[in-house]
Structures are given as C-alpha cells and as structure tokens.
Image (cartoon, rainbow over all chains, first blue to last red; front, side, top):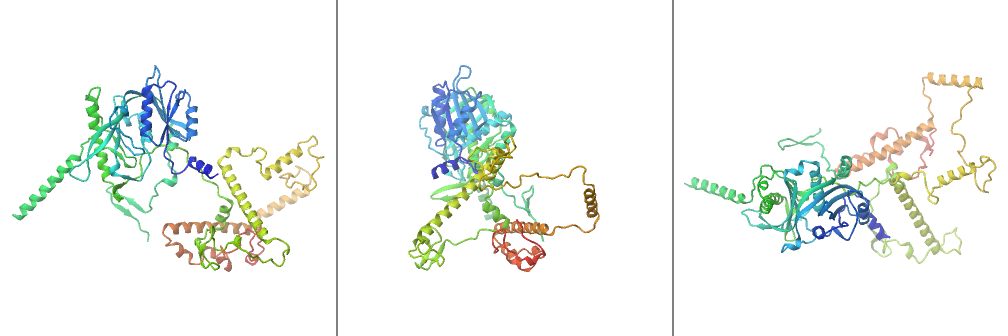
Length: 257
Length: 365
C-alpha cells in the first residue's frame, strides 16, 4: 500500500519537479546510423534516459498518441525518435511534453556522425552535469531556433544542483548555428595552469559529433507555451519591501517614523 | 632612490598581473550571456571565422569552443566557494532560463473539516514536547508510540466503575473502544480525501454511479422515483419507519392576482408605513447572531495574520502585540469577560455564552 502511494506521489504534479527523463525510440525503418546516435545520446543521458529496444512504427508528425501513451506509462517528458526514409534520411525528432501532451517537436537531419565508439578514450560517467554553450546569432533570430535552443537545453540539462565541484566539470556540449546547419560537438575539459587562480582551458574532442539540419517543426501555440513556462507564485523570489536599487548600484532603504 | 625603486616594483607587479590575466582573457565583440545555474552560455557573436572555413571546420569550431568555454569557466571560478571534504565546491545561483515544466501546477487542496473549523475559531496547534515524565517507570518516555509514558494497553488492573455491570469484561471494553475510535478516524480521513479528490475532478459534479452517491443524493433520487408514477406518487406506500420528506413543498408562495382586496390593501399600507418610518426595523436575534459570527471570523483572521508576522520577524512583534490581553479593538464590542476567554471556551458551535451580554440574543446554528 505504501509502495503504491509512494509511486503515485512521485508522479503527481509538484512545485519543485523531478528531473526529466527521456525516452529514445527507434522508428519503423531505423538504420545503423540512427540507432548508433540514439545509443550515444542514451549514454550521455544516463541514468535519466531509456532506450527502447523494439522498433515502434509510428509517425510523430502525423499521430502523437502513441508517443504520449509511452510517455505517460514511463513518466518521461523528453523524447527522441529516430527513423530513416528515402525522403528524410537519418531523421531525428526531438521533443518535450507538458502534461503528457506534446509541447514542441523538432525534426533534425543527421549529416555527419562520428560515434563514441569511433573515438578513443571516450568515457561517459553517469550523471555528470555537462556545460552547454550555444554559439551563433541564429539562435535568437527565428522562433524555430529559439525553441530549438530551449529544447536542447531542456534535453541535455541534467539534474539541477545548488553546488558543483569545480574539479568535476569535465564535459562541454557545444552547439554552433552556421549557414542553416547546427554543429554539435562534445569536448573534454583539460584544466591547465595559468598564472592566476582560474585555469587555462584546453579541449579534447570526444564523441559523439553531429552535423544537424533543421527540417520540420511542430511548435506549441504561444499561449500553451507560456502556460507551461509559468512559475508558481510560491517559487518566485520574495521582494523585500522598502528597499530599492539605483541605476548606479546604490541601495536605498525607507524608514517609517 | 627608494621612491623610484618602489614605483618600479609596483609597475612591474602590475605588468606581471596583466600578463597572467592575458592568458585567460578572451576578446569578444559581444559579451556572452551566462546562465550559471544551468552551466549555460550563449554566444551571440556572428561566427565570421567559421564562414571563411571550408566544409570541415573542425579546427575553427574547436577554437571557438575553447574561447567560449574559457569565458564560462572564468565566470564559474568567480562564484563563492566552500571547501567540502577536500574538494572545492562552488555555490551555483538559481537557473535563469525559463524552461517549460513537466506537469501543470498542483491544484490547491480543499481544507479538511477540522482545518476549516480551526481557521474559523482561530485555533492554532500547540507545540508539545516529545518526552513526558513517566512516574511509574521513573524516566522520560515518549508521549506516544513504542514504550510510551502512560500506556493504557499495558495495565494489568482496571477498577470496575460503580455504575457498570460487574460481569462485564473491562479489558475487552477498552479494546473495543479503541477499535471504534480508529475506525471513526479512518472514516473521517477517507471522507476528507474523497472531498479533496472530488474538487480535483470538478467535471463529475452531479452525476454519480450507484454506490458512490451521498445520503442527500440518495434521498433526492428516491423522492424523484416516488413521484415518477402514473398517479404522481399519490398511492405510493412508505416503509414502516420512513418519515415524510421535509421541504418538498413549493419554494415560494404567491398570492392570487386578485382575490382578497382587504388583505392586499392592508399589506400595501404596512409596506408604506415601514418605508416612511424613521427608525430601522431590526430583527434583533438575527442581527446579533450575524455580528457574533463576523467577530469570530475577524478575530481568527487577525490572529492568523499576527502569528504569520510574528514568525517572519522572529517573534519580535508577536508576543508584544498579544500581551495587551487580546486584540484591543474588540474590547469595545465585547463586554468584559469574553475578551480573555477566546481560546479556552468549548470548541463546539453551540458553546454556552452568558446570555446577559446582549438582550434577547440567542445562539442559533
């Protein structure tokens, strides 16, 4: 009885939410490349990601019910669906859900893929928080790119922590938007001595590396998106009364006599 | 001479510092936007160097990544750090990027019956100590739970009270009473839960499958069924102990349009008299009850507010405000003794108050 109660409590809506889990699904025609991509991403997202071994014959852009059902069953709000068509070779659909309904869904085509297993010395310890960097002004220009950026952040963010061990920062995911393509690279951080406290950074490329092309998008309507982003009142930082800040940074207080 | 050498030293020190910082500084046209809570950095500079590069811009990408990462690391190293078990740990700020939630916001639960009552009366939970002194064992024991201080179940001697049957089993009676109390508590808990879930699914109001209907609904359904015969319920028999349904008459009674002229004239004249009179027509009983109820609610709300403020300001104002013997504004309305007795009176709504306070005022539910 208690076990059931704990299970239900884990799944119910809360003020501070759980870490989002991801499901990685293979489509009806998924070739070796796409499967390897899904496996690599699963390794990156461990333990907050599950890769389904069986192929699911669905078309996300036409019918979202089976995806929503899977997400509801497994309590996962992020998904990645890989498939292969003649028209859309090496296709990858990334999406996130709100209340078990698809919120945003973006289709990306994989052009160049270097897998984890092709690169030597590539290890992926579980649960490390990677740093994320988005480069290129394209990420703020169109709504598509903006939503893509927020989707990628949501996907690769990892658990939210309040403290982080500085020596434990190891990996960087770097997304560059250039000429309509998105270059995804992952580097390992090497901290070298510099003259002062902050170290000098050197990067070593480790897998996986993808060149992505933006294909179709299915974005949520603006009002649904703003509803999902809404922060509950309890979590908003409480404003201290009678204290105000100047543009120069001076803090003013008010005393009532 | 000394002055010159000091100056030289200072200048040299500055130069050294600048050199050191040179290694880690990166020059960018536009500053990056940082979200340290998510370990995120956004570079808005247009990637001009990359555009010049060919189809495989690996080296350029790597250089760009190195620069951006250096900037991000610089920011991270400026955060306040603590030392935790031989590792340096930085304290991250809250994430600033607004990312969508997984599930909708939790709906507020409706208050349980006790919470509603306590809110109305202004009852707040008393803080009790965990340990109580137990005379029998001569040590501090828990208030409840394993090895508690006054354990009823462990008694080996129960005196038969004067008015009880001498052959009755007092131990069994105690066990039975406990079972009944537990069952009643469970029933109330489930009822509160049902009410909470009913609120969470407001779409199912009014229509319930059999087995899930409340007493009122069953009564209503039965009445409707009784009247749904060909003779509109005239020849339906009632069960032996069934009482006649109350309140099933007409809700409003209208006088016929024309009939009793004398009564109509009397009513109209009475209405005009009331409207013209200077003194207000007051139903004293209803007015006093309403006033008492309002005062109760006001006091409870005020006490709640004061306790909240007291908690926030570390209790500085709270006890200070209450030491004046209850909220002073109420002293005018209540006469004497009631001012001090707010919480200690019997909790029931039909609690006895001295009738002398207001002439003819009676407590009515």
